[in-house]
Length: 281
Image (cartoon, rainbow, N blue to C red):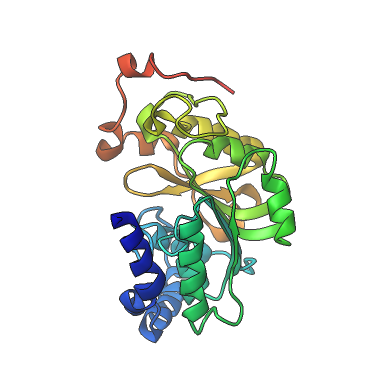
């Protein structure tokens, strides 16, 4: 009952509850900030703020995109939740982007459709919404069905488990930037859980995912470099290698990130890791 009440509140009142997040002030402030950022050296964690995100991701992404030129203003958000508390929402609402939200939850997609339909900035050119559970077999077909192929600005993956395997499988889009959830608790070891296709395959979704080193290895294979992460280390941001020099964006050494106290303190013990099914890709 409580979950249904929350759903109804979000569906019918998100537009009013969050009205301070899509005002002209928010939009003009970000425009001015982008101009100033281009004049300053890049620091991966210098600009952290939340419009729709929780741990600074809006600011981190804004910092990067402000330094890129002619970015395709197209996003793909896989595991979008309600499509509002999203890594892509600020781009869609305040910065003129469009794209695709994918989530397996029907209520989540309904909330997203309702919210973006009400906004002046998106109601005439709304994002596309798919209510679908993604897997390695269907992800490229889903993107093709949404008419999203080739160059895009941002790929966001947050599905609490098979994030690594979904990114590995994607070959139909070529994003400038990828933000993806890692299993920071796996520490500095190159570890990931086997492809499961269904969460809770091992009894607890808290033990599903890929470590920072594992995702950095995959990124290298796909032509990307780690350039940023949120302060807790669980959302990693990668930039396509051919954009590094022109943007003057520096690589973030994963060893430096792993040494952050708030990251290091979250590591699982070796004893616990022994009980988790793990593979090395």
